[in-house]
Length: 434
Image (tube, rainbow, N blue to C red; front, side, top):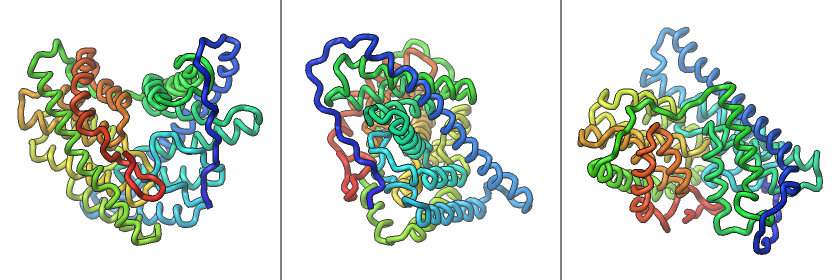
């Protein structure tokens, strides 16, 4: 039985004209409520995962008198995480949602309420246990499902798509700590589609952008997140910086495409095992072996680890950066195909940052700020195929206006390398999506 709630697509809109403020004002209260609620749910899930991670990676090893990040402990904990998540997927109502390899950054139909607790639990265990996935896909699915269910209960005549778009934008705003990422995602989603209502693009983005603003402000007030890596500001870029940005972005995109092409094949191999209590423990064991090889920096979603390696661009050799890059990409590939509930953006950011620092270590003329931003841009373009989100994420990591122009230029040849090719997401029948 499908775990999705079907939504009828909105009818095609007629040629748009500006709508009145009276049309937009009813969106204000729902957008604010959804924005704050989605942020708080995300923060609660993240806090629970942090507490669990502190318990299993610090308190428990200290009590046993062993190293929390020793090779043996990494292998044991990742395997145990696979067993625990496998139990949730096997036994929880709705099996913790659909196959995560088929889920993107929003856009799916809302899940029914009985599925959401299992999905949230599987995501919290994954985040705490160390697999290389982020919280974005499952928390968006949970928030969309709750917003849709509650919204239709409270306002039965409201359009279903309203709650989906508000919750998606609010959660993306909460995840990134800024509504800009949500605005870019929504505008990219609406491109080439009939607008949900008459009016301009900004009329249609009014509610989602307000929800994203409420979500991001709630996250900022409660948790004060920051994507700024504290890198030295980039001055006026020169020809070396431009060449570096183009070469690194293109090379990173080609490198990440190796995992994209392998994605359906690895997913099919795990699928042959046929049961979550086989696929997830095996995936956890493989991730543990990779973690033992790459070290603790290649574990978890990767955001804190990106800040650590970016804080010391010359603190590791080219070989060490290369090892981190390969191990993290392999870990992302395995975690996303064996059934762990999580998103692919945050670990992809680590892969791109490590790739950029590898380029800097090999060619010191590559500015580390340019290398990191370009590496992240190339990897995200290959993995997500979402140009605006990739460009925004790459630019926001480096607090410098000059980086935006470089990334805009570097994105063009990198996009030519990835457009029309498979992306790291599958259709429900297991085929690659282009």
